[in-house]
Amino acid sequence: MPPILAIVLAPLLGLAALEPPAEEAAMVEAVVLVNEGDFEAALLKLDEAVRRLQAAPPPQRGLPMAHVYLGICHLELERQAAAKQSFRTAQCLDPALRLDPRSFSPQVLREFAAARDPDCRQVAAAGKGGSGKPLLYVLGGGGAIAGVALAAGGGGGQAGPTAPPTTAPIAGGVTTTTSTTMGTAPSTSPPSTVAPPPSTTSPTPTTTLPRPTTTTVPPTTTTTLPPTTTTTLPPTTTTTLAACSYSLGPDRSFTLLGGSGNCNVTTRPDCTWTATKDVSWITFTGATSGSGSLGIPYQVSPGGGQSRTGHISVGGSSCTITQSLLGTGDPTATVSWTSELTVPGARGQVVVNGAQGAFHEQGAAAHSAPVQAGANRLEAQLVSAMGRPGTWRFEIAGAFEPGSLRVVAGDVLTITDRMVVFRLSGKPGERVVLVFQAP
Image (cartoon, rainbow, N blue to C red; front, side):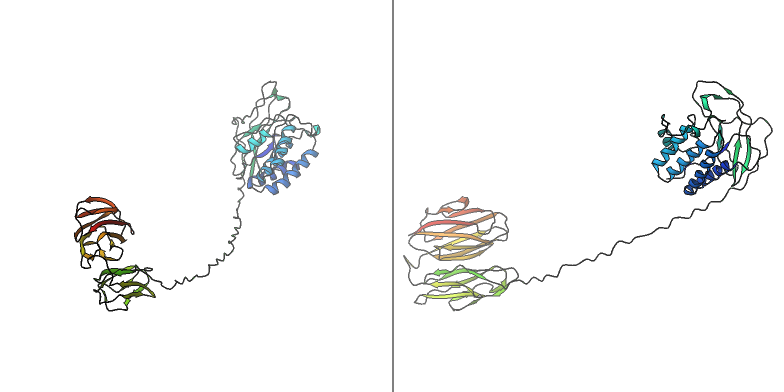
């Protein structure tokens, strides 16, 4: 809270001497301490002044203002209850006491007004002031005088003309001004605050003592460092990938005419592999090594006079390939087809009668496979794709009866006697099926 404007008081007694009475001297010293911001020391001096004023014979004109300054000190020291009690005592001692807003801070004026209590029975009648002459309180220091007249007359009379103020120095560099009220006229108006009129007589010589120097020592700042925080990092976790495993398929059966197929490898993208075969009549027609899931294309040679079995292997898993001498219908009857796969990033597989077939990359390709008399089935399936739509076109020729081509599964875009175009969404596993009759 900033220091409150300090006001020096002097009774209007026409003082001519430099040494005031003891009770007034204590009061002046207390006000000087208030002006310097030493409120604790001012409280001690004000207590002394109050005791001396209460012991002095009536009228005890300075007693109400002593309690005002006690209230200011308590207010500065944030003792609200004590400040209110001091302001209340001052107003009970002198009901006509008013504070000039030009000389007291708005906070003091608020607290002083809030403390007013019409019931003053707790204040001893013997100590009540305000029956003497009005008091004049002026600012001290450097000879600068701001006249603040406080009406303190008992009975509510109006102050009459005043004699020119007399200015005299007081110890501590404080200037006091004394004024004398020249008579009183009865009035019913409330007490008012007036300023002393300018002097019309020869000015009295003024002696101004040097203003005391006040040195403010900044308070010591104590910096408290926050406690040291220890961060415990979680233990490092090492993730060891499981060993690579491989799944191969599908198993295939061929007639004595042989044919082409595809052995699909399924594994993690970081797993590498190399394919092997255990028979000579199976020939690789594409890459035999890679990483991740891929297909291994192969070709089965025509039969050598007996049934036989071979394997394509990767990492302990294999595709089983069998070739049988047994067949139905004309073993030389074949069907050929041209297909065009236009699904982005797609790879497909074509199977005829569940045994014969071919692996098909994106683009156009021509294949053939043996057929059996009667009903035959051509099934095509996407093995991989990028999820983007496209088409798959089939055109059939060879040993099949014209007009017998029918669609069993798939979204047909176009169909004729020999040609079908399927619409595909591009999802792996998507399947289309055709059936036809062989002679």
